Amino acid sequence: MYKAIFFDLDGTLLGMDEEKFLNLYFKYLLSFSKSMQIENLSVDLIEEGTTQMIFNQGKQTNEQVFWNVLETKANLSKEKWSPIFEQFYLNDFNKVQESCYAKPEAQEIISILKQKGYPLYLTTNPIFPRTATLQRMKWGKLDENDFEIITTYENSCYSKPNIRYYKEIITKFQLNPKEILMVGNDVYEDGIVQALGIDCYIVNDALINRKKLPLEMKYISDIKGLLHFVQQLPKIA
Image 1 (cartoon, rainbow, N blue to C red):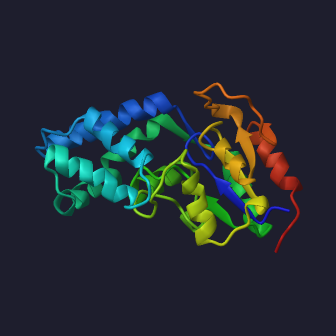
Image 2 (cartoon, helix red, strand yellow; image 1 turned 180 degrees about the vertical axis):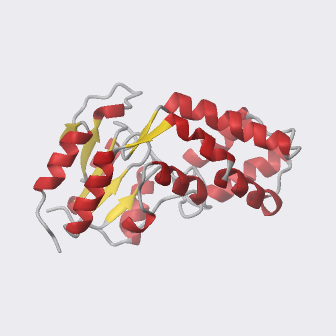
Image 3 (cartoon, rainbow, N blue to C red; image 1 turned 90 degrees about the vertical axis):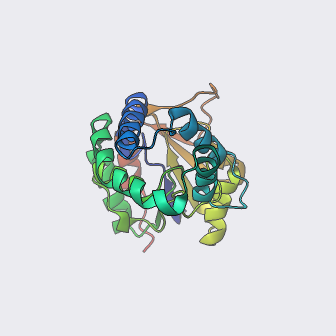
C-alpha cells in the first residue's frame, strides 16, 4: 500500500507547452533585466546557472549554486539582485502563463488523495525560486497547502535526474521507498526513482522521453486514467 505520493508539476499536474514556456520565460526575463539596466545577463548565462544546479552535488543549495554563476560571470550579487528578481516572478513572469493550462482532472486527483489521507509531495525539479513555483501552481489552480513539501532551489541541494534529489526527500520525511508512488511525465527524470524501489506512474499527455528509453513503468496512462486510478485507491486515514 502506498503511504506517500510524489508529484511532478510541469506537464503532469500543470499542462504546459514546454518550448513555448521557455521562449516566453527567457523573453520576459531578459526584457525585465534590460528595464533594470542589467546588460550582462543572457540566455547562455541562465542556462549555465541551470546546468550547474542540475549537476549540484549537495554541498550548497541550488540557489547558492545558481547565484555563484551570476556573481562570477555577471557581477550580480545575490544580496542586491535576488529581491529584485523576486518582483519579476511576482509580476512579469505571469505573462508566461499563456504557455500553460490548468488540468481539472489534476485538481480532482489532489482532492481525492487528500480526502483519502495520502501525504502529497510536489517533487518538481528545484531549479526555480519558490515564488516562481508557487506562481505556476496558481496557474494550475493548485493549493500549496496540499503538499508536505514543494521542492524549490532554496530548499534543495540536488536536482533531477540525480537520484540523490529523491533520497534527500525520503530521508527528510523518513519514508519507505516501497510505499511511495511517483507520478510524472518524464521517463528519465521521474522514472529514475525505480532504482530506489519506488513505483512510477507516467502521465503521457505530455510525455518526455529524450533518451528514448523503454516505457517500463508500473503504470502509464493519460491524466484521465490517473484520475480513475486514484479513485480506486483505498483510504489510509
